[in-house]
Structure formats: C-alpha cells, structure tokens
Length: 339
Image 1 (cartoon, rainbow, N blue to C red):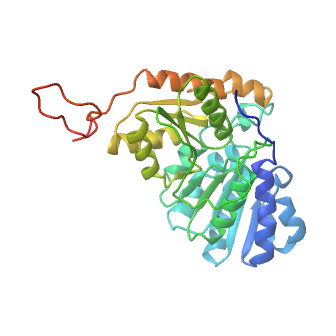
Image 2 (image 1 turned 90 degrees about the vertical axis):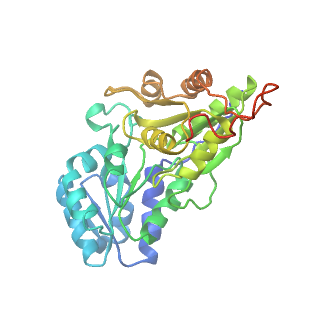
C-alpha cells in the first residue's frame, strides 16, 4: 500500500516567504519581476521592501540584463517570472549578461513543468532545466517541497555565482520538515538493493509511492532526491549503480536534456548501468487539470513502478558475486563494462 502525504504549500509560495526572510537580513538583496509578482509570490517582498523591488513589466530579457547590472554593482538580485518566459525569452541575456561574466544573479522560475494545468503548452516549461544546465557556472536546482525550496533560496543568496531554481504552481506533498540541502548533493530517502529511483520536484513523492508499491511485491528500491541537477551528486549516482545495478529517473521535464540526461552521462563515464526515464516524451502537453496531465503524460507513481519493472528486466549482474566454476580462474570483481 502506498503512503499518503500531507499536502503543503507550493514551492513558489515558499520562495516568496524566503525572499522576505532574506530581505530582513540582507539589505543587498533586491528582487525583480516581469509583471507576475502575484503568481511568483515575489509581491510579498515588494510589499515589505518597495524600494528594493522592481517590476520590469513584460520584458523578461531586459529584466535579466538589469539583474546582471545590479549584481555587477554589488547587489544580490533575484529575478523571477514563469519558467517558459524567463528562460526561453531571456536566454541570450542569461548567457551574455549572467553566465559569461559569472554575475551573482539568482534566477527563480515559477510554473515549471506541465502541472500548471489549464494554462496550456504556451506556459508549460518542459525544457528549462535542459537549457540552464548548459550555461557554464550555473547551479541548477528543482526542489521537491516547501522546506527544501526555502533552504535552497537562502543558500542561493549566500552562494557566489549564478543560480537557477525552478518552482511550481500546485501545492505539493510535504517531504521534509526542515534540513539543509547543499548544492552538488542529493538526499537518499529510502534504501534498497534491487533498483534505484532518482527523482526531483513533485516526482519525489511519486518515487516514494512507487517504492512502497514495489516493496509490496518484494522489490526493494533505493530512492534519491536529486534536487541539485547541476552540479550533480555523481558519487551518489555511481554508488547507487554499483549497489543496485539499475536506475529509473523521474522528472517533470522533457526526457531530453534534463536530470535523466545528466544521470545517464554520469553513468556512461563512470559505471554503465541500464536506465529508464519517467518524463515527458518529445512532445508538448495540452490544457487540462494537473492530475489529468500528469496521468496522460506518464508522470505518476504507477508509471515509475512500470519503469522499475522494465529496467529490472535489463539489469546486468555484476561479476564477482558468485564463485567461479571449478577449474577456472576467478573473474574480475569489476563491473562488466569497466575497463
């Protein structure tokens, strides 16, 4: 039987509250928004610190350029809009005004993924993580719940360099009650020996439900919350591959270029193992309720379970776990693909 979660605030709500917390502690924190402060929750900061809040209007590219200038002047700018607008429309400025000079800009995009629901594909971002991980020097994070989002926002303010955080529209399951989430790390939530499920964002709750369903059938699954996509916690991924021999990556993003690609790249370089992805296929979604869209496009715990069963059928048995046949030398204890 799969677990039930207490539903907590949306990660965008946690972002707004964390900004106010930062504003009270650090006078150098400034906030920019592209006329969506009610939806991104930056309006809370603007109400308390109007002299440090800038509504740039529907001009995301200009907003990013201004944020770069403010950072160059010693401020700590947080700039926000919907992910599809801020990343897609502001990408050239993110590249030239932030990534290239390594300015201390914090980019927080709301309404990531398809769970924004009825607003439709023009406002659903399924490519933002793929775009942002290619920008040199950027830290890229996708928090799973409000507590994690708060810590990552506070951490971003202390980090010297550009940071991208994707927040979501819907209220989400409460995974954590607190804790610290360093950049470049992950959090193991369950242990298992048969398969590893790597997830982030709202798919972490689905991964934990899948863990329960698999356990009922005698399959133990390790669950890793890979909240930091870049830099990826390669040590945790390689260790999981060595211990379990097969992985499933679950994310509310395109199958192309996101967390799944980062995990596969890591394994290809260090410890090849079969990987299945639970993500959006090479397509845009459509308009519908969040639940309808997540079901139609394969982003539920049931799809994670199916992917785990599929990857287990492709699992390669590491050599060295059984005694060699009589009269033959022991085989290498290395993974069969290692050289």
